[in-house]
Length: 295
Ligand code: NAD
Image 1 (cartoon, helix red, strand yellow):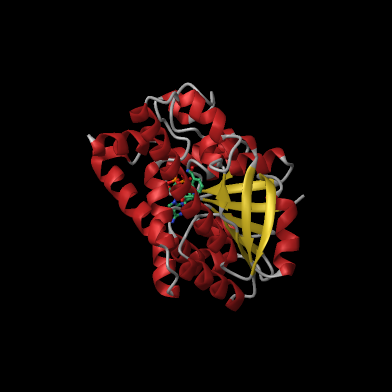
Image 2 (image 1 turned 120 degrees about the vertical axis):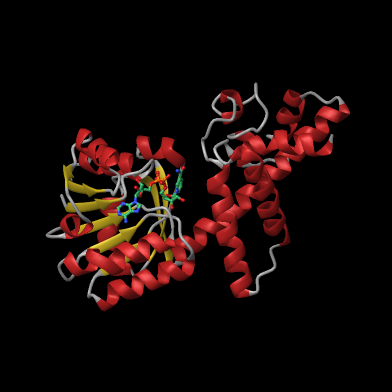
């Protein structure tokens, strides 16, 4: 079992760190928000007073922070200065690919092993330990990190070189946003045509229009009991986070010259939805916004 420093005990980081404790690891935690730090203590983490203290004398450090600037600030600051050479540093945040690659460079210069390992599955998956992890970094780092990541997730895929995990994450979420918008438009059109939602679901779920957005996360209530539509569109996966990922995908598309016209349209629609005060709604709640936009 490993000694782990965990930095960033927010909505995702706290349950993930708790699951590492349950998996038998010795975990010390740090967060700049005192109440989050106390939450860590309740889940069996040792409390530390700084990034430096959390990073000292451990085999592995995990960061789960809001955005690329936070990761660069933390890795480029006391984390890499305090860790001993050879420590494995894993960033599980969803960040831009450029910052992810920069973080790997900083780690290599400090003689550490590093992985980018963004996650999918939301807070429910984080609590249950069933996240999917998309991992970038060299094989030696992956082989060391996999047994640790198995404590927080059930599917761990080595996607390739440094940054490949973030690349997989933003491609996946751009595809999800486009699929969800398609599902929303289909159900809204069915309403106007007088076609029952259940009939459309029964057909689509066994036909070529099938998608995860329809069968697992159906955006209309009354069909898939566990979908946020049945819980007044409480997240789930918040629209504000989807917008963040769509912006990262557009940034990547611009810098590589990839054509993503539907990704661009999805980013604009989610921007409008979020600007209308819906950042905290589940992203599937955009179905109501699209319905309203047509009236
Ligand atoms: P969050 O804001 O709840 O947690 C981030 C934590 O980092 C906060 O507790 C904050 O205090 C802490 N923090 C910020 N700067 C710090 C510093 N310098 N030192 C120590 N702690 C610091 O966010 P979250 O929902 O847990 O998401 C974390 C990451 O995971 C994001 O990149 C997000 O996009 C990604 N993600 C979130 C979800 C989700 O459903 N919430 C799903 C998949 C991926």
